[in-house]
Image 1 (spheres, rainbow, N blue to C red):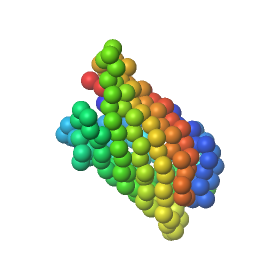
Image 2: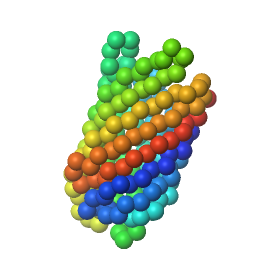
Image 3: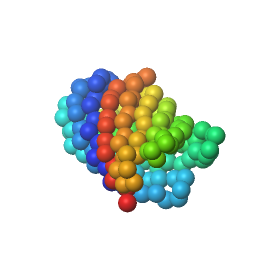
Image 4: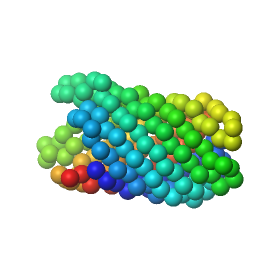
Length: 168
């Protein structure tokens, strides 16, 4: 799957101060029915002028009929910062989700995640922690729309993103 995802940073952290917008391109490869590898890259405004990274996700409890799915993602991202040598974030994302299908056949897959980990900037590091809510809407056989709100709990950003994904 390939996708485009505009993102707005609504509040920032001391590790990368400055609100801004970004435009992310993402490529997702399904390794198995329960695991994916995603690569993301894109420019941005504000303090984060560029980003590149990847995420591996694995559903250790599959989303089956009558059962909520749960999984863990591991993520590594590098951010080029305007006034710094850059920031690297390494995070784990425990998450839960549940897919619903409407009578017209459209899928709606809401999730909640609690990303936490470490951020490294200019030889220092700090723990980071967020709360993220979002959903993926499959609007047709090949097109999906995603949305996500991430809330800063410790040393990270609050953001809002929307995207469009094409799946073959």
